[in-house]
Length: 282
Image 1 (cartoon, rainbow, N blue to C red):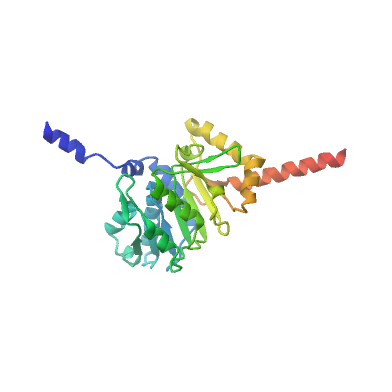
Image 2: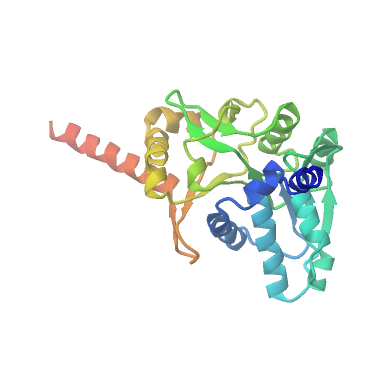
């Protein structure tokens, strides 16, 4: 009896490892699109946040390095233990040129991630300047009042790191929130409003990458899209002068995506032109 209980206890997965297996195919779709469109040059820097979507993104980058056939000298900084483990066990010598650095003093076993002031110290050091920062999330929501809600899993230590990534003290050229369709319109119970952050960096674009919804996911997704289209939401984004491209990845090909932000802007422009036409006819 005791041996059976012991066996069950040793096979219990952490929350992060459970999430690693969830929606894996669509996470890879998003990761493939991002790796193609934010392609890193030799010697570039990249930051990976905690979470299984960031692990998928690292796996795609590692595959890209091996496919290219030469060591990359890419500088990777991460607080994600799953990425560190993947790198430590990578069989290809082509990855040995990658400079992998871990940050954070306090280990969160549930989320397989490190947190703590060392992350801020590294990102504010002025030494590390990544091309792209990949950010994991529990979910994204849009409020009727113009709030851009970002969901996160843990407590204060994770909150501090997430807000730091949006402040972008290391001047990354792009920040990318990695999601799949079930997370759109479902930010969860622990959130903050990105647009209300005092230190929000609006110099570099903040991308939202997701996948197309299934029928079961469509209601929440389309309600989120409806709110995103509203004048209140668009004005809130414009007021912060934030470049916020929302990309919906629909397949593995380079053209299999929709730029939702551009579509919304085009619709709004057409609506204004139509109103001007009607006023001119009166």
